[in-house]
Length: 122
Picture 1 (spheres, rainbow, N blue to C red):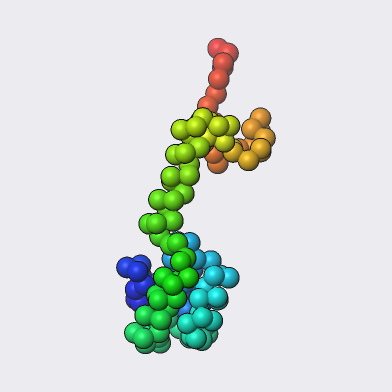
Picture 2 (picture 1 turned 30 degrees about the vertical axis):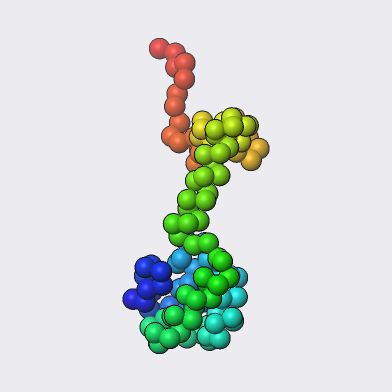
């Protein structure tokens, strides 16, 4: 498997799909990176030379694209800031409820977890 910034990306897939295995890089960003690095997106990752991988890594760094740990830290810091200033969104994050105005009377099971029965009669 090829490695970019210490992350292994699959050899059997096309490079434009393999780049999206890096956290913070989606399909559109991958295409933009490949265009700037002058690498054909239809090549399989296993067929790429070491020079191509270095070019791709250089483009990611030069464009200032945040990936992996840096991006995760930035997102965590943003959530921590919201919870520390005790704003509405921060309170919803803290309580594990939907943040963006979704209903909670029904649904919202992904955020709330398994159903807890309250006030069951005997």
